[in-house]
Image 1 (spheres, rainbow, N blue to C red):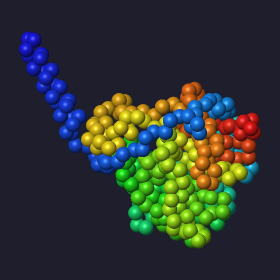
Image 2 (image 1 turned 90 degrees about the horizontal axis):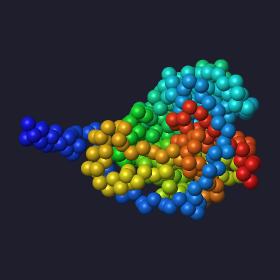
Image 3 (image 1 turned 60 degrees about the horizontal axis):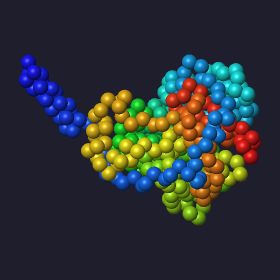
Length: 358
């Protein structure tokens, strides 16, 4: 009996090993060497400033990834079930403003007061003041939008937005992380002409978008490369692409243009040591893909927001290193003295009074 048990155990172990190392997977990991993780000190020193945020619930749902504030102070967020929620300026009186039948992520207003929505499922949308939804763009240059992520509308009524991946949809972000290939792009939609064109391709999970105050360049986050690129789109440097900030201590998600020349960069979470170590080892990333999702690397509860100047230098550092009541910071939008913070996973969003920090 003991010999049979040993034999069965060895056979079972063999099957498990064959599965972990040889079972086919849908990803094709690239070989890359992540830069050393910067220490959480100096500009990145841990703090608990974000514990000062006032938190507002999204009743019965979760995932207000982005926050947009209207001219009258009304606050808008998009949540999991495809709903756009509207709050009064003080954060009360929540109501369903519109339903996209998709997954609304990035939000911004155009010059006519319509809410422009980057919807991961349906593409780029526009919602008028009555809540009526119009589809603006579902493809660019003949390539369907795979994962519309964030949007920023400039002063000429052009919407600049990210297509995070033309290969994986929003249900398969882990595949994108493990594969680590350039599947993303920066796209622009001219509201006046209804033209939708690709501006820059080969981005590693194109995410947050921010247009400069003078409309001369666009910042786009590359989440899977821990960096932000600056793409000049107007003026004498049009067509130039350069690195704005790199080797960030976390996964860059949303970015926005704030006051006094500051760009607010939201880090989803600090970098994951296992994912970084697996970077130059494609077989290890295939193995990670094969193990149950519950055992795969998970982001830490650590909301993290940086304020950057026009040269990419860190001038503000807002964190909650304890992840006490909020995590997965995916956006940071400034309106007046307040910084509005979204989360892809939390059943709430936050508001921080910046005037109390000075």
